[in-house]
Length: 168
Image 1 (cartoon, rainbow, N blue to C red):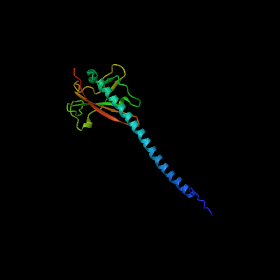
Image 2: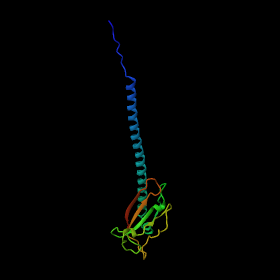
Image 3: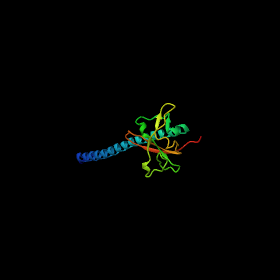
Image 4: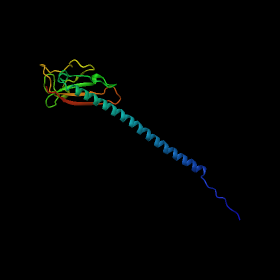
């Protein structure tokens, strides 16, 4: 009696096809993974920039809790994160209806006609009054809009906050 030998295994063609399919799958998955990691890094930078911008705007709001700092439109003790420039912190004088006004205390028409003033910041306890802090005649507006732009960072962010003049 003759026994036949059964050969088990794959042919060289089957192995090559399997390796080619595996190579295509690895290439697609690695490109997808690389794109996802890049998007994650970009999102982290954007979140960091937005958080820093919020921190600056809250520092100015806290400084303006003192009426003297609000009246001079300066913010003492504001520490700017790296990459931020002081010129990126600005204010716009507003009417009681939160409409931008000119130095003559007239509602600006269009709103973009209202002057945008750079806020003076100081790391010490005192700072000098900003240009445009008072209106014509020496009065102080009852409301201001703080605008903070991150400036030179790759992920530029701009936030604004309307602040009322503090009470006596």
